[in-house]
Image 1 (cartoon, rainbow, N blue to C red):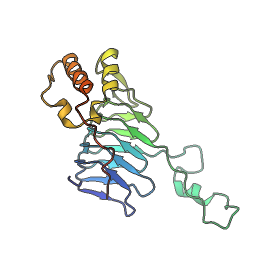
Image 2 (tube, rainbow, N blue to C red; image 1 turned 60 degrees about the vertical axis):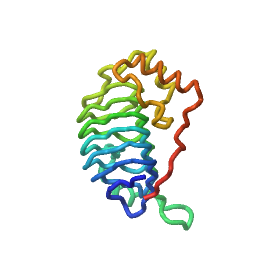
Image 3 (cartoon, helix red, strand yellow; image 1 turned 120 degrees about the vertical axis):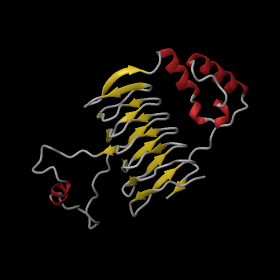
Image 4 (spheres, rainbow, N blue to C red; image 1 turned 90 degrees about the horizontal axis):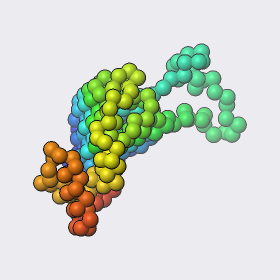
Length: 215
């Protein structure tokens, strides 16, 4: 089991499955939990903010912004402090109400995110999706879609609908690596046939959810 080398906030609430690598990244989980799945990694300069869930086998490029915040543009100022000091006092003697938590960002399994990509709060990125370098993702991305641009738009699907349906049903990322060892990798149809046959045997164990490493 390896622990990531990453800068984190004082109130660390990051739950990492085995073999996660986050060298030179910044995690800000103080306001809400960050979860990163088995063997996922991010390259240096990437920022991962609170309320973020990242699945297994994800590949995240350099200097990405994961769960970028949104500021109100229809008030006196875009700065959050101006809104905080103008809140009405709480009717109870309790401390001032905290800033409402941002919506959770959910990134599926086997997602590839290119360098300098930005993914905003509240978005869901489906399993197997690809986010092009420099893309700004402002809305949900379907499973196995390739998106790019500002704002990001769908360029194409990685596979046919039938193949995508099979992959989402198999959920290969839930299983031990032995499931996909020594399989044909250049022909996705043959790959799926082998995976289905192996799963059907019942001889392959699933990875236990979150062997939680709490930083």
